[in-house]
Image 1 (cartoon, rainbow, N blue to C red):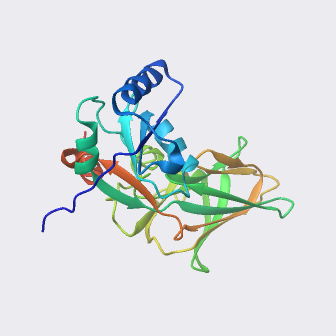
Image 2: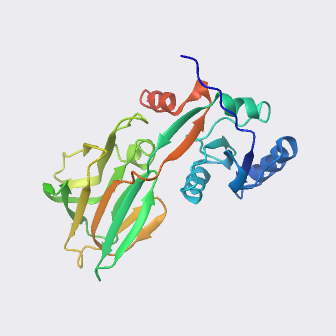
Amino acid sequence: MPKPEQKFEKIAFVASNMPQAIEARDRLVARYGAVEIGDANAIVALGGDGHMLQTLHRFMNDSIPIYGMNRGSIGFLMNEYREDRLLQRLADAEISCIHPLAMLAYDLTGKAHKGLAINEVSLFRERHQAAKFRISVDSTVRMEELICDGILVATPAGSTAYNLSAHGPILPINAPLLALTPISPFRPRRWRGALLPNKARISIEVLEADKRPVSAVADHFETRGVTRVEVEKARNIQLYLMFDADHSLDERILTEQFRY
């Protein structure tokens, strides 16, 4: 079946604060014109992966497809930077729909803090002592005690980021899964994490929270001194990433698994 024609002619450009990104934005605006975000049917983000994450968070509720071009140091979520044929590249692009994670973190006073994560929700020890966690999935305790430096829940889009560095699995972008990955586990020493259905509700209780304080981070949003963190897919939020057809996110994730 032929791919339906896509037209993205009203473009909003956003750039990181790097000089090469700002210069690229100015050249592209001069060549293709630009509209305000409210009038755009596509956003072109110029920078690296960090800027792409910021752009996704910034326009989380706008449902506008975002096409990244690499003008930063890391570009896993970005397309190659080229100024020619931008309108055609947008028309030919593959669009991946992703959902962020919703984090609800409770601190020592019982106050709840909400955050959204496109890559991962992470819990980290704050001091020299290792953290202790109790892990439940859909209200069933699956691990009574995990002693480690931290633990994270990663989306498929975030599985190649910190999750991969912590020896977690790489997930295909459309896989209905989440990766639960420990960070430097001490006991049980051989536990390497779990793959969970993305409809699961994950609850991580911090044991001995006064003695072993823990921070919770949803991408860039941090809450310190947490006692319990609940994580689940934000089903009501859809984000649209655009990739060149010959270098889709699925292909990048597949390629990454064969790097050595």
